[in-house]
Image (tube, rainbow, N blue to C red):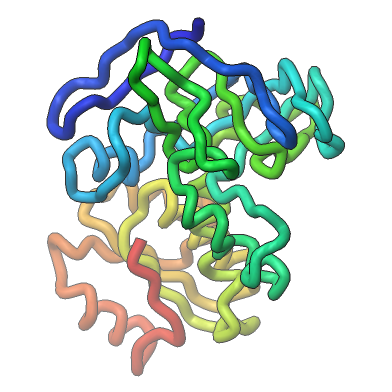
Amino acid sequence: MVKAAVLYETNQPLVIKDVEQDPPKAGEVRVNTGAAGLCASDIHIMHGTAAMALPVVLGHEGAGTVAEVGPGVTSVKAGDRCILSFVSNCGHCSMCRSGLPNLCDTNMATGAKQFDGTVRLHSGDTEIHQMAKLGVFAESIVVPQQACHPMPDEVPMDVAALIGCCVTTGVGAVINSPAIKPGATVAVFGCGGVGLNAIQGAKLMNASRIIAVDIFDHKLEFTYKFGATDVVNSREVDAVEAIRELTGDGVDMAFDT
């Protein structure tokens, strides 16, 4: 048995309960959850503005320690501390073989079930799904080995959990864009977890001007730590006009996070 927060109905509280957990099958591992983040995607599912099979254990931003490995697992071993990826890839479909594992067809087709189309959590006769094959709102999880990325011991679990979603989403949106070039001017709208990391991504790519846009001054002040060169409070001024005033003719790239 494992304790988990289960969503049975949208717009209803999560139910904290003990559920039955199957052991890992071939290519799967069991991970003891070390830290979990709450992302807007979780909120969308809770509110019913995004669809997912119910009941489900939410949470796709996490890190933990491998406790058990199933047959055929070679990439991790028991005791490994891992960042958890919310997009496992099968390695065999057209997208994976084309170098786009983040768009894995098999992952998309199986959704909140494991790659073999079955679940690992049950409550009596009820099957319980795992968001993104993870469901980190649980004490331990059974996941594909492809979801586990070993990390050094000195990386704290709470930091590692953020790398599982908001860091890679924000940084990746910038550095993986073919349009980003050294010296580019960039505006980032929304300075939450993803926005801060989009700013960080622009800094890593040597953007010459990084304009942070938000409606809260305390959030804007924090963006300087991640590389923002200018800030705009769009509740107080017209953001478009402010950006034009700062740049002359607008930015090369803008990110709505």
